[in-house]
Length: 375
Image (cartoon, rainbow, N blue to C red):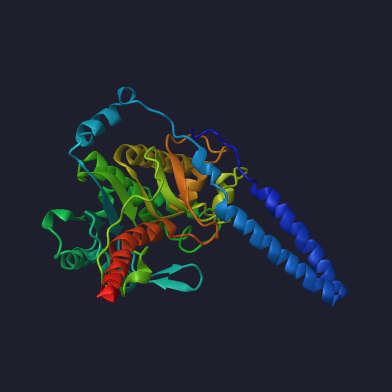
């Protein structure tokens, strides 16, 4: 259950160990003992590599946690959904949901600038994605872009909706978010706690996934959110690909890329002020009923954070909603996919793409090359 708040392999213990090592290292640096400095540096590097190997091959204990069990008879919402999607004839494919809301050019961090032209370039990858796709946007130009890049696929595989921001719950809270950001001494992190519309866009992911499930816009048992920019590094590729479920996927959970470790000792404001990230928000996927409950709980968590005047992006909301200090217990647990590198922002998206390419492109080509060599 989501209220089993055991902090596996506590982060604070590791922090203390690292701080002690650094403290002793600084003593040596200032005492000018070159040989000892070299030995300490080697010790630090060796310790890091051993710790990384441990993280890499040790099972992720978070994945042992169990989602809350709800029978269909206990929930009117689930009863309705099972009537829509419970038919064995419903495809086990994954429907991809994405959105683009034009915020113009905005700062991402202190040194990056995100522009509409940059997002348009990243959209080209969706022209090679073979999954059913649902797109939401407030931009007529984006509608035209997706119509062009998706024209080679069957017409029923793509649904594009031109929406007005004011029709969405996620944008109706913009003024509340702005007032929170304008509080004296509120942390200034670009654009997370500066641009209220950017925060609204992040919350829209969950509203829109919830909408497509509730309104029966998807015709598959599984659904995935996919940010426009997740596959930004593959825009130069030309082959089509399909997103499948990751290996060892638990249908009672929602899959995410884990970026950093979870620290259960924190409070929501500490997560926001430190701009802390536990999971990367660019992609998440799950079964229709699990995703419905999860997105409902996410939106409820946003409302609770607004009530205590704390807000940032989806990544900080997700971190906060699983903290013991947060007065809300999600019904759905998350399943982590990570290498423990601390930089696995897009890892889930990469492994599902790589799996398909390995089985559909690389291995068949290797077999074909082998057969040619035999001729």
